[in-house]
Length: 390
Ligand SMILES: Nc1ncnc2c1ncn2[C@@H]1O[C@H](COP(=O)(O)OP(=O)(O)OP(=O)(O)O)[C@@H](O)[C@H]1O
Image 1 (cartoon, rainbow, N blue to C red):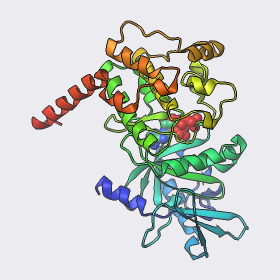
Image 2 (tube, rainbow, N blue to C red; image 1 turned 30 degrees about the horizontal axis):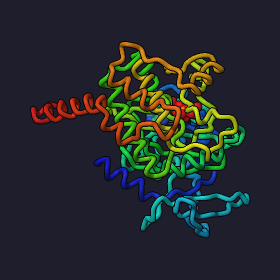
Image 3 (tube, rainbow, N blue to C red; image 1 turned 30 degrees about the vertical axis):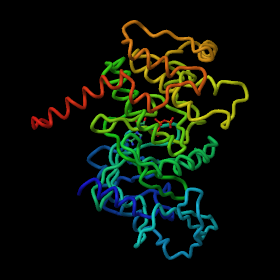
């Protein structure tokens, strides 16, 4: 089935709650033929060996289906969310209020639930979530399923950020922004159905290559500029642009991810590698700076840091935490001589202390360094398609 059709399919699914789907319950034993029990806690089945796994997962997911309550029978009172999506509030038998969000207005509402997905290999683990490759059973649509434990979100005090991430990301549609197709939850977990980024984290590619050649860096920055232009037009500022928050699609295209996490504790790897401050713009370091003291221009500063790190292999203000802060507030950095004059020019136009004086996104797309590498690439690929090459 064509991708477009499959995506459309997700857009028309309404999101409903489940009763105890995949609760920390042990499956398998009740099916006498199996001696091994599968716990779906944290989708722990991923730790099973391959021969058992697919069969047991099938059984476990089938079981969750058997236990599913048809929540569509529960009377609901529709209200509007801040994003204009229709939100229904139902009360379950435990008195727990459950909320379901309809992303669009499907003529025949369908619910999302774990049983719709075949769970594959783990893709990674974040501070609060585990991410699995998954396939929607009826369409074969491949996606990434992110599982967040409500108790962990609560402990970390990040429920609001997750809610914001869901609200923001589910309304974004751009080739360089990771899609969030939908979400659902049970009493313990929240499941996010995400676009699968086949080539994984950009951060890992950068560490492996140490630094990118100029043509590659320029193409990534052009894609970032296009994505940020789209986001800023929608009044969304990312505020946490860094290689760890960028994924790579199957065709090598970048996908910005991690929305609504700007106040989220930074990734451990970066803490241990080079501190947590590297991408912070000077206006966010000012004492007492609040959300409303800075604008979407913060993303331009981070784009400058990103351009530098792509080309040099390390961030421009990398130092001890105190020195990094000091150097950021003075824009104190030097670009190594192996970086081309055009790239250096763009970095210097982005890493400007006054947010209003940073080069605008439109001008980035017209900058000689971007034009040089992206036009060449466009010509190369149109030439190869004329030749009938892939
Ligand atoms: N859509 C996706 N496609 C492919 N891999 C993914 C996808 N989403 C996440 N991953 C992988 O799973 C890992 C964990 O992702 P997750 O979003 O939970 O955490 P994170 O953003 O890396 O870290 P943190 O939670 O600390 O911000 C990622 O680092 C990435 O390797």
